[in-house]
Length: 175
Image (cartoon, rainbow, N blue to C red; front, side, top):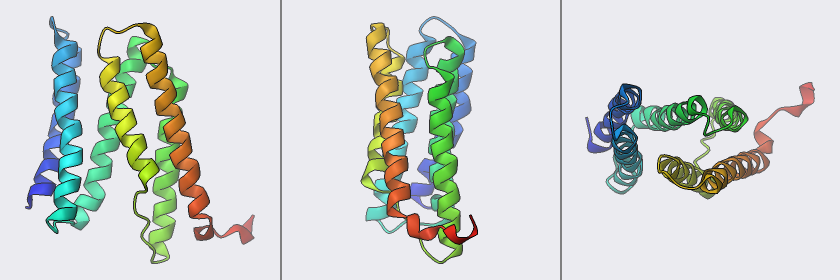
């Protein structure tokens, strides 16, 4: 197994650790969970860099890397919903976008086309991870509101851009 895939598996293994720390609830557990979340987020950037620059792109990585990202992010978001720091509608937008983009990628793959992640998707991922990190800190409420706003806006923008750029994938004749 190559280094990029090992980092992806490490991220997957960190998700239950992250959640366990949050639910254990010991003094300072928010900071410990934040540290795990940051490390897991950094493995996302590291494995992508290594895969691209060291020719370690694999089918396993193409499947597991985005899945690991989505599970990590949604796990953190659901924790914040449970704590009352993130509205459920914001999480619903994120999940809807992820399902819609994944569905369109499946259709594209069926037609022999691979759709790589665009810059707006990378900005969305980075903004979401940074926003969630900030939400772990005891900052004023307006910071959380700003984080939620940035997460929702970048999610919507990247989703809309993704669909507009790839409208030709869809067969609209059966509507």
